[in-house]
Length: 467
Image (cartoon, rainbow, N blue to C red; front, side, top):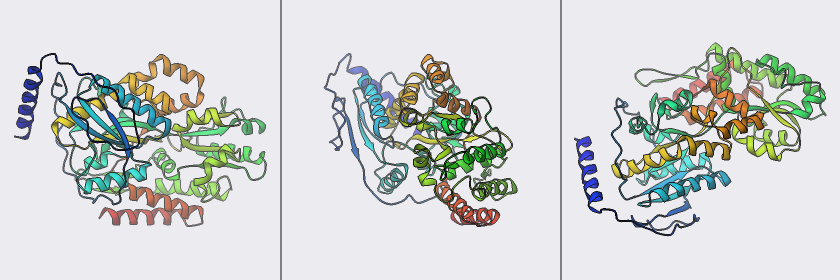
């Protein structure tokens, strides 16, 4: 019945639209501002930007089973007039470029009024979106970390049908990257600002120690540890061999590399932590070894980036989003190697996804049109090259601009190469709790707690939250 009503509504909109003939509308484009403005009339092309505030967290509830994906309906010839609220976690010049792409969409679709809201960091955005959801004032589109939680928790998997739209060409999206937008095994968002961690290193320090890592990079973590120790020994006192700016993200890659899936998802939706298995404990013991052998400082990950940029760190595992920024700002020669591994190469994906939260069919159609526009090969590639994020489409890598950038930057070439073995972990409502527990466990390990005990405690705490 709901589908029938949507079809009838679409037919009515089409009839009204057709009756208007070839009427044209021309309006001035409003510049982006930092204050919220009233919704624009349907005939006005306008983007407003603002900042939200709010507190609170969304209540957790089991997701309804996702409906089976169906063939995508044919897109209407013209989008109906409507207004959209788009909340996003893309800051600085990256955010400005994102806004420019939204403006380009509006120039093609002046009947759609879009209110842009920058919601701050991922953590700030989670608080604001959760509070808005509780208040019944959710945005129509949310672009932030794990945005699929906001729709997946409600059993809203409409986007699973949207991506079958031939114009989206879902087969061109890298499989691992598409999985990153899943909620409990079902598509609940689309990938947007995608990144992996990259092992950057101070090329000058490596050269002084007699290492040419471009010609002979370490492959495994054991090999890496020996190289880091040797280069550190040749460095001034106070220099460490390795650190990471995001420990929980790195340990997820390491767990996958050692054959550990972090969590399992049963057919009935049950999530079971796996990182306390022997394959996970082996990773925890290696983590302790890096601290015991004084290659990595304990409990200093928040300062790792500053240490690396000041020349006090040989290697750092950090987001690929730093490529463009660091390549131009560091005072030494910087290079990158592919991430070492235990049993097989793997890197855990990170970054943000985009989901459609509105259940209004007219707003949903406009929301999907916007996301489809932003994520086509041309626009998404331009976004990736400008912001330092990675292209989500296979076809992007063959484009001349991407090939030229890869030839210019071995950092970017390394990050692109790692996408061939990137992996997405299962997303679920208590994922934030899991990240917190893993962070605490790693800190305990660095400060002397038995690795097995630390990971077992983390599992027990996560199980309590899952229950």
